[in-house]
Image (tube, rainbow, N blue to C red; front, side):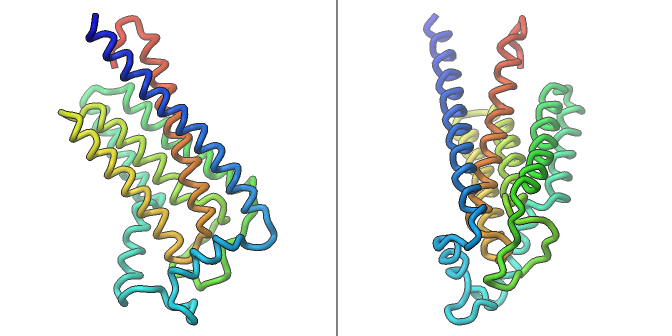
Length: 231
């Protein structure tokens, strides 16, 4: 009986954390949407964007000459082609190892996140920043950052899935840390390259984290209703 109570308490704590993440993500997104609707750029948005450029020369990014190229490599971690490859490779592995439910979970979470990101961009017609020159090619609207949102959805979903089957708690925490780090680097790179306002990136993180946690909660609910309660 103590063992059962321990498991139940861990599940309830995880659900509580997920619920708080969803609520916080939704609140943060709504607040950033208000910033995005303003006709003039927010002062903090402007200050952060200019902080990544040489004072007096908005065209020159801070750091050594190779820095911009390195950041473009990092931002590719959140590109559609890379995320599709990572997601497809993961789904293929899960199917080959007989984990069809997990494969379906990854597909629904990532594909749903992509659809949600596209709809949100249409909801708020915010142009890209013109305060500094862009250091990367962009073709869509600015709010929210698709790179930030989809990297949060994909890497947090895969990180949570990998942590669930990690051999120990330390390994699980490490995997989640890597997922968070990848998500942060992608979002920060968008601001460095001048293709997004910081509020765009923050909104993408908020929406992506909320969606990933909502999918996780749904998966937990489906799991709890299975007669044998097997993953």
